[in-house]
Structure formats: C-alpha cells, structure tokens
Length: 312
Length: 284
Figure (cartoon, helix red, strand yellow):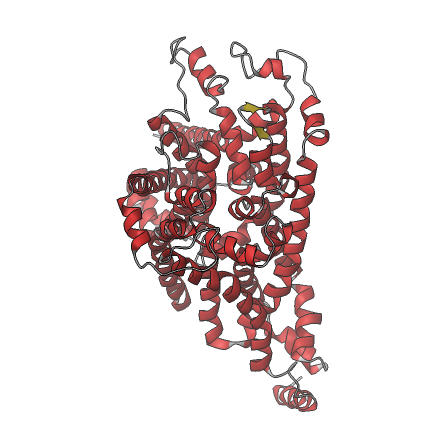
C-alpha cells in the first residue's frame, strides 16, 4: 500500500471517531493518571509526612502534633547510640560494597566464557539475591549458631581452632560486625555480578583481540582496558549496592537485632526500634531521614547515566 | 613455546574453574545447608561432636510434618499468596497502561516522567514505614492483610512501569497503525494488539512482583501484629523462632521451601530485570 493511500485511510479512520480513545494526548494522560495518582498518594504523601514528622513531636499515641523544629535531629546527634549507628552504617556499607565490587568483578570475569552447565551455576549464584532476605539470613543464623555452627566444627576438625575455641559469631562485637558484613556481601554479590557481566559482554571483541596482539598481560589488560570501559556499569552496581546496604534493616534485625550492645546497630534498625517498637514516631522519622543523602546521591548518578544513554 | 602456552591456558582454565566453584559454593551453601538440616533428626543436629556433614541417624520427615501441621507455615504461605496475587492484579492494572502511555503517547515529557517514576522505586521502605504506619492506622487497616495490598504496589508499580515502558518501546509502531487503519481506536489497538504481543513483558512483571512481595519484610513487620496474618518472610523469622529454642529442622525446611522455587522461576527472567536496573545502559 502506498504511503499516500495509507495516510488518507488513517485520516478517514481518525475522522470517524474523535473520542478519548483516539485523542493521543488525552488518552496518554488518562492511562498514566492512575499510576501517577497512586504513587503521589502513597509515596509522595508519606515522604512529605516523614519530613514533617521529623520536625514534630508526634508519637504513636498522640492525636495532634506540634512542630518542634530541629529538636529531633539535635537530640539524635547528641545520642551516643545514634552516633554509633551512623558510624556502623558507614563502616558496614563501605566495607561490604568494596568487597562486593572486588568479588563481583572477579566472578564476572570468570563467568564471561561459555561453558556447559553455566545456567545452573548462574542459578546457584543468583539464589542469595532472589530468595527472601529474611529467610536466607535465618540460614546464616543456623550456620553461625554458637554451639552447632558448621563453621566452628569444620575449623576445629581441620585444626585451625583448638578444642576450646568457641567463637560466638553474633555475640562478640567485632565478629558480629564481620558476620553481618559477610551476609550482606553474600546477598548483594549476585546483583553486582550480573550487572557487571552485562557490562563485560558489551565490550566489543576487537578491543580484547587488539590488546592480546599488543601483548598486554592479564593485569594490564584488566586495569587499562576492561575496567575503564565498564566504569559506568561499575558505578551503577556500586550505587545499587550502596542504596541496598544503607537502607536495609532485615539482615541486622534477624541476625543481631543491633546487638551486642548496639555494636551492629545501623540507622535503619535504630529508626525501627525507636519509631515503631518505642513508639516515638518523630524521633524515628528523624533518624530515618539521615538515610536520604545516600539516596539523593544515587539518584544523581542514575540521572546522569540515563541522560548519557539517551545521547548514545 | 607452544607447550608453555598450553600450560598457561590450562592454568587459566583451572583458576577460572576454581573461582567459579568457590563462589557458587559460597552462594548456595546456606540453601544446601537448609536442605540437609531439614531431613536430620533433632538429636543428630544438636550433638556438637557429630560431623554435621553426614547423617548419623536415618533421615526424617518429622520436621516437615511439624512445619505443615503444627505451625502456621501453611497459613503464612496462603497469606503471602493472597497478597501476592492481589498485588499482581493491581500492579498490572496500573503499570501496563502507564508504561504504554510513557512509551507511545506522552512524547519527550514521558521520558522524564518515566525516570521520575523509576526513582520512586528507590525510595526505601526504611524512610517511609513510619509515616506509613500512621496512614495505615488512620485508614483502620492495621493488622490486616489489606494494609500490605495497599502499600506493596508502591514499589512494584514504579519498577514495573519502567520495565513495561522499555518493552512497549521496541514493539514496531506499524503494528498499532495497521490495527488502527483496520478500524480500531488507539485504545482498542493497545488492548487487542499490543497487550497480546507483550505477554512476555507482562510475565516478567508478574514474576518480579511476586518475588518482591515474597521478600518484603519491613512493612509487614510494622503493620501486622497477629501471627495468623503474617506473610512467610516475617512469620518464619518471628513466630517459628520461639523464644530461645530454635526448631532448626522445621525452620530450615520452611526457609528452603519458600526460597528456592521462586528463585528458579526468577532465573528465567533475570536478564530483563538487569536491563531495567541499569536504565538500558547494559545490553545483556
């Protein structure tokens, strides 16, 4: 069919009905409206309330509320538990994400080639990410159990631990932090690996071939060619990892409840214990809002990336 | 020289294999451990002198029996299924038209709006759960599964809209145009032509939504207090962990059953999620 005839037909079809079902602009708004209204009502409104609560004195029982300005933030900063939680959040997020990036790059490089049974390996590696976090973490609770820990048994039987060494993985401050970080690395490694794998496979083979002909060894090849090329993807992986690590409370809630003595308390768990268990909504909201800067930084990275991928 | 190169390739292969095997073990070990624990007798589990890797006593189905007949696990599963299915329906009703609208009808504003909607996915429940708990109690939904039905689409709709937008964009425009020439309205073409060819995208959204509902923990912990209304992800760690006495066998069986099947299903769709996650900058 020629284009002219097609246009004519289309014009006739359009003239026949000029209702909403054909008015593109109106139909577009109408189809988008339910989702947007929903998101504004149930993300926008609570977010505004979170801001409002953080400068108020609202509690679970109270009916009205009074604006108290930065009072909640000031008392948060003066609270040693809060400072500890803030520090723990940073330590926990930075160490776990540094480990995730290194390990995920290693694993992604190893998984680049095709081999038999790759789909099965990928399934195994993805398990920690897809399984409900709270349940995977209970698996670790059993693995790190003080008396029946399989780790303790294994280390004792190969002679690394003496017969009277009984480390309490979740009860000794440093070990507890290390355990929590390990479980987080375990859980976030799959996502970073899969993202990086996508990045690696988008590098044209010519570049690798050229480097091989030029005689670049593994490390030069890796750090001077591969890493610069996948830098934007590394950034995406890092950003998601940081957001998930900083805002997550499930791993710590299940493993240690912030203990021993708040040694593994992070902002997210502290906000929960203060706001919901303790009933002080205002203080809890103020603590949770300290998570916001991380989120904003993540949003900026994503925006930049989106803009660039549009240009290309 | 040739033999040296051969040795080096063999060495590289061995290292690659060792790396992959090591990571796969690290990732899958807790689940394998759940499976082994589920079938061991309790007296075998709680003897610290026993080698935990072998069965000292015959395997047992006792833990599974307790899990299904003497705990509320089946109830948690039914609750999760109810919330999951309802949230899937709401998500599809909101996200499918919105995704189409952003892909085809709203022009360049749609692009920006799409990114804005995606951002709301990143607003974590740990910032929202405190005001949310107030909203839920104002609506009289506290301790009801409907509170979860109301709130869960806040994270399923943004990501699903984003995924579907990408999906609709790659469908050739000729398809709708041909249908419209045949007399369908724009909306009719969307319903009768575009939706049927987008089944794969819609399936992706369904699986994605179900996994997110399975995983959600913070809202369920905040809104629900009655044990009979817990979902699996909250019920298992709170109710089945009774006091200080852990029923490890049943606990591990519950964790395994609720984790692994959905993971296998998810595996088929993972590339699409990653494309969405990376804002299309990775073409997996």
